[in-house]
Amino acid sequence: DIQMTQSPSSLSASVGDRVTITCRASQGISNYLAWYQQKPGKVPKLLIYAASTLQSGVPSRFSGSGSGTDFTLTVSSLQPEDVATYYCQQCNSAPPTFGGGTKVEIK
Amino acid sequence: EVQLVESGGGLVQPGGSLRLSCAASGFTFSNYGMSWVRQAPGKGLEWVSGISGSGSTTYDADSVRGRFTISRDNSKNTLYLQMNSLRAEDTAVYYCAKTGGYSYAYVASWGQGALVTVSS
Image 1 (cartoon, chains in turn orange, cyan):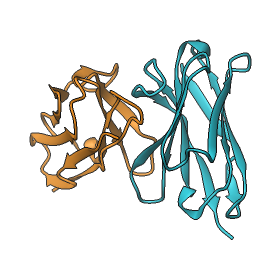
Image 2 (image 1 turned 30 degrees about the horizontal axis):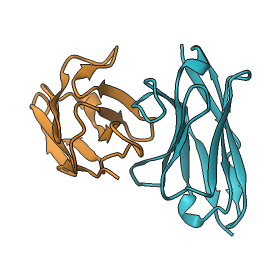
Image 3 (image 1 turned 60 degrees about the horizontal axis):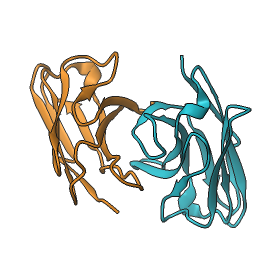
Image 4 (image 1 turned 90 degrees about the vertical axis):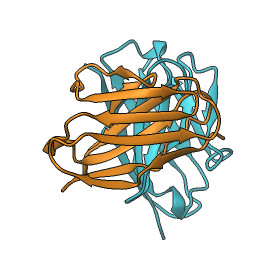
């Protein structure tokens, strides 16, 4: 199975800050990478698929990049409503494994 | 609008069985792979099983292989997860998931989840 490693596991940033979360795959996955946001007590929500394609309705301050084994999710200007846990998932091969998550808080 | 409504969750004793159902609407069900994803209390997301649009191909996580069976009835727009030989570590919220296409593609839409508690 492909292992997905996210870092950091948590972060605290101020409103307006640029925030970057990284995800590393244990082997190459091309661009078969998705990012999800899960707010406290809520259902996960798809943010980005195919490494950099923004899901419809997702604010443009979210962006994704990367290919192969290294990927990033960037929030260009952190907002209070972005407090959540973020997960990456590889979809290159079954089982489609998730990263451990990154909890984002407001400083 | 895509709607996924799970049912069948509840409390079951270790070694017992449970069947989850997911009623889908708002899209052409047979055109999409579907998955089950679970989340244990306070933990991260874990993909459980996936099935192709036709139902001919299925995939399972190692943790459930041989105990859980995913299936679908395209005439009823319904996805199922038959769970046998349940263990305490299977306790989780189980989400029904519409993928972006194939069986193990990204999750495009999520249900509200069904809580399964395995305890004596």
